[in-house]
Length: 217
Image 1 (cartoon, rainbow, N blue to C red):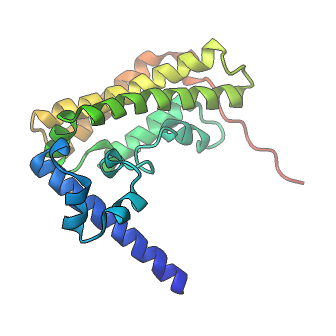
Image 2 (spheres, rainbow, N blue to C red):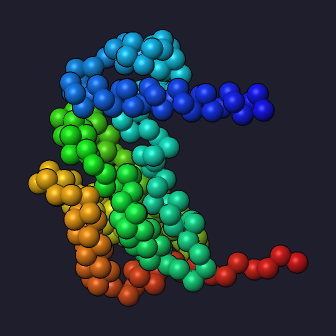
């Protein structure tokens, strides 16, 4: 009971720091707010902020949400009979339908996006994160299909799915900057995913289909 309360308090503290930091960054710009100012506004010490967030960029892109394993995790979690590409397509469609905050399909995301685009360290991290997602997915596909880690096919498929993911985020950013509503953007994303599925090709859409897991004896 005591440990449960402690963990809940930690989550609440982490959430408060993140929300306070985001508000300051959006209001004044990422590069114009210090960790000390975040700590003061959240009424915690600077050391406490660093206990929860190793780097300033983590306040905007927390590792548990902006994970290099995002695409690989989606593929690993796919049910039997589902290919890697269909797993990614289905997951992105579901996120769009529920207006998931991970895709930025929430009110007020426009100002948040402007803040991120104005900060070179954040845009650089996003670009690197995209490369890491693709590399992690390629490694997962190679492992699951029994291919060598440097085999071309897993890397080509991973690149196509990684590029699709990046295109979805780019489309959301473009439409957000144009002032469109989350509902309108979500519908546009669903149309984009349908178009992508039409042109991906059967080789990609049927690659790395998960087989039924053998029953344990």
